[in-house]
Length: 496
Image (cartoon, rainbow, N blue to C red; front, side, top):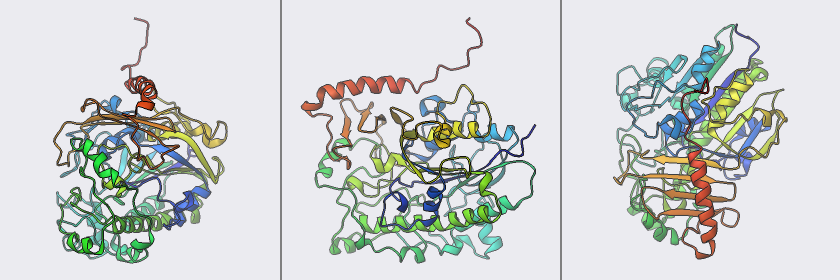
């Protein structure tokens, strides 16, 4: 029996958005009024961590509520999504929800046309990448450009986009399409609750915001990326670790270097970083992309409020992972565990039911979203879900600043687009102060940071004699925590 009073769910997941790019959470250099107002109506979890640094394994994690070691979807570009895994959207669809998707799914290779699992989505407006269409008619965003805007997308996008460029005008941008499609979905008359996943491509590289938003940001007025000259030497230790940018460089260019290293054609995926990059210009473009995203997200919030849907709709704003953005001389993503890459935004609102205008310092993981939704909608949490519900924290029944003792990020051959071909397996555990990363495929290589004393993660204590006993204790704890991400398997129904 469907309970029509159950809440609707609007789940907005940006792609490659860092935790520190929201004005209401302390960034005075960016303009995000709509994300800010969502925080005013909900709870911002200021210490949320992704379970992997790449799109597919991260999305597999938060959609199943399971660690990568459990669902075994570690790689971008994987052939298929295992049919043994159950998505939260499928569970909700089976319970009576009408589920819709706008934008990316990316649970398996989307190099041509993504093979869909049993995902529960009855409405499916798919767009893996706004810049291409590998199968004619498959890109719903391109169909919108053709049918609604009288634009030929073949002429709108560069086939080999530079890492840094002016993008399409805001009115033709994929984010405008996302908002239009979201409003169209919500306008439909229905007698049951709905879940809508909105998964835009931004602020994923290439860094190409609409011109009208790029003009709002002066690179010279922004703080530079986190960088010291010592990063160039330190990162040489990780030269055989898979990353899209493997060699650290000074991200702040001189005027002469800006001319020498002016943006040039890249690759269609926006996955090949330049030899040298303009870190300040990248940050300006990245912030502009986020402001454009924020504006269109605001249109969706406006529709909910204008149609009295906000009081019975759970709204989630998050990202699959972050972006290095020049920190430590690196850019894009891969097997690094710096805050900018694995620490993501998470904001949850449900008017009249959840706390409002609160900031939580609890350690949480993106796999905690799925069980939170199940508890909020009155459904049982299956035995195989590993995330822990945030519902009690959100309602005020639990301590808003305590949830998990340790969070995990787990990388296993996850990145395909790298000049490094060395098999890379590494994992990270973080207790809110100390971060330990072990590169299992590279014997003896690791990182230990004290973020209380060193929030910029510049001083690697892994080989520091004064921290040797602490390191050994944390390695033992790390082993226990990583083993804890491996599930025991099929549910036991009897003693034998």
